[in-house]
Structure formats: structure tokens, C-alpha cells
Image 1 (cartoon, rainbow, N blue to C red):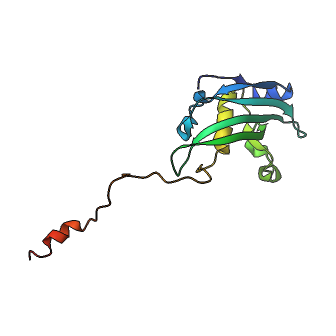
Image 2: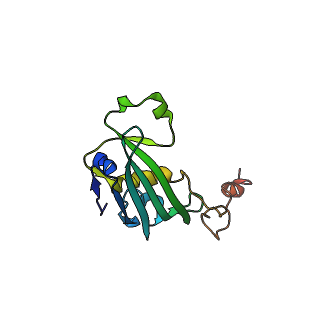
Image 3: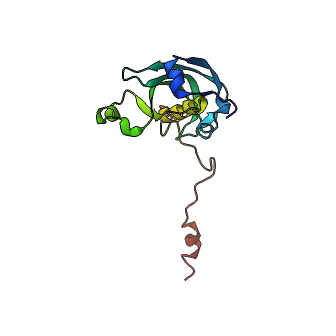
Length: 163
């Protein structure tokens, strides 16, 4: 990862901090293996706030287009990325109620003095990607194009009358 942006997760939320900018796709090292092409940029926005339960939160948005590797034809497939995540920070996971754990509208993370925002964005991108990206319709790659199909039993034809 070429870029590193570090924040204090609790202070960022309490102070209603805001970050935005562009990330070079080629710098997202954990995502590169899933891509057919690493050219381009993604735009991000991170806003801090305090929840009604008085916890620091981050509202994360990432937008752009990734060229993923189609699992059927192995060519690039354009994937529009639109990540929207609400992350709430807790000092201790034991303080969460069962109702909060079951709430799918937000995710909980351990509070950190030095939170790497780019790594967090990369985590959210990985979670948002499809397990097996593919085109709506594409052909399977052809092995041995143009060669005549040879039967594995054609050798036996020569032995047929020699016994």
C-alpha cells in the first residue's frame, strides 16, 4: 500500500472529522489479485460522528469502477463499486447488547488510536466484491483451438486384425 492515512478512531468521531480523496487502484495490494486491470482511481469519503448511544462512528463511502477477472472467460469485467458502510467503535466487544450484535445496519470495530483508513477502505472493498464475478454472457476459453479431435482409442484400430 503506497498511501497511509492514520486517524484516532474515537477522536475522529467525536470531532466530526471528514476525509475525502482518491485512491490509486494499483496501491490496493490485497485487491490486485482479483483484478484484470489495476488502472484508475477510486474516490472515498469518511465522515466521523457520534451515535445516539454516544459512540464514535465512521460513515464510509467508496465509489469507482474495478476491472475484475471474469471467472468464466478470464477476461476483464467492469464492476461498478459503491460501498456504503457505517462503522461504530467500541472499547470492548463485551459491552454490546444482543440487539446491537444482530443489527445489520452497522458494524462494530474495536476502537484504535492509530486506525489505518486505507486498510479499512480496502477491507470494505474486499467484502463488497462478488465471490465469482462474470459477464452476463461470455464464451468459455477454448483449449487447443483448431486442432482435430483425436480419439484415445484410435491406436487400437491398428491392432484389430493382428491377433
